[in-house]
Amino acid sequence: MSKKRTKYTSAFKTKLVLELLQNESTIVQIASKHNILPQNLQNWKKTFLANAEIAMEPSKAVKEYKDELIKAQMRNERLTTLVGKVTVEKEWLAKKLKSLGSSNRKQLVDLKPSLLHASYSLSVNHQCQLLGVNRSGIYYKPKVNSQPLKTTQQIDL
Image: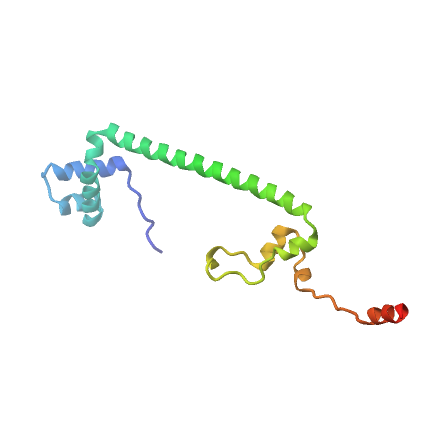
């Protein structure tokens, strides 16, 4: 059965790093005393020293965090308004398309999407869904029956 991984608290890590920084004993001695790996202690020391600046100037770290938060909120607001605008435009276009006849809407379907704009071209199926047209109706070609035409020509004679 494997040993369960131990999670150490930040207070414990700080205590050991401060003990190490006092130079009273070596990394190996402190690690064996507390039954941890020396590499863990070395990593904790690196992290502690890298973040020591934050401890000396907490207002700077808070200010940077608040600036990032404000930028993210502004970006979120901008994207929210953009999504709202696009939604309104889509609904408006959908209403206008419904007022067109089905034959006009069928003509709007692009059966051969452009290779220039392949990254954002719509599939035929999606185009039909947006236009409210059955996909099968796009490909249907009605047969021209010449029989009634001949009959009417004979009647006219």
